[in-house]
Image (cartoon, rainbow, N blue to C red; front, top):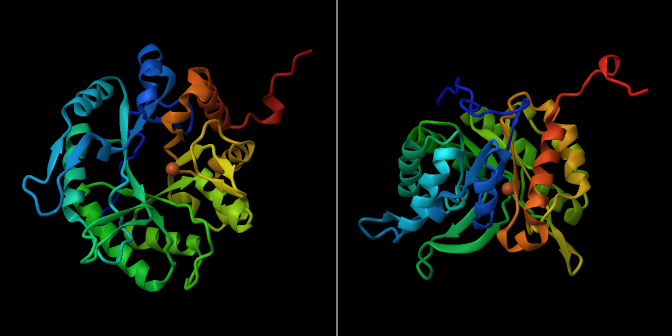
Length: 313
Ligand SMILES: [Fe+2]
């Protein structure tokens, strides 16, 4: 197992115990030109910047010229964090080491402050559908076989990347039968076995809590909070009675409450990232993005002891 002694905060000018970041989307270009200092880092989805021609092709990957030029410009002004979407580390039928090697090559190129992926399965390898991408995370049973499978893959991934991998909790829309343990027990065991970190997505958690009927705060209480390196915050909306992780704009108050309650209990928290889908930019607006960043910074400020708090008279 790799040992991770270096702080992922290296080089990030944060204003408090954790840095504040934005998940990059194309609609942010104007704001980032005008106010590059509004965010401490940018999280980027690396798969959006290269072409994957498929496993049986050589060369398999090629940088997309316009997108890569944009990324180079972003990297001149912002510390970058990689947030992968294509690894599918929990797929029983497939594991794509060439994808990991491609990610490692880009890590060498852009020196990501940290690298995260999803604790999920989205790719399925069958004779009928080779390397089929399901388009959304498939439900997982938290059992011992999956723990063995994912632990081995996390170790191999971290060996290739040369750095710690963070894994993000996902969204499920129905209860999943067949688990041997809770999701938090699974994640805690995975952290113990591999030294990986956790990306705690508070909105994903809220979506599950609303749709499956549990208490998000109590869920967090069962997680090893020393493993949390990054958090995601986002907004969602209801559709036909189901609450969706649609990244549709401002965070609901419950997410702010969860952030304020949880962040001070995560001693290794390096950054909090606001995610929204660019199709909602016209309703959120640049002022709306700045407002979300300001609320994140306020939530991350250390609490001022009551005895030294200034009181206006
Ligand atoms: Fe997320």
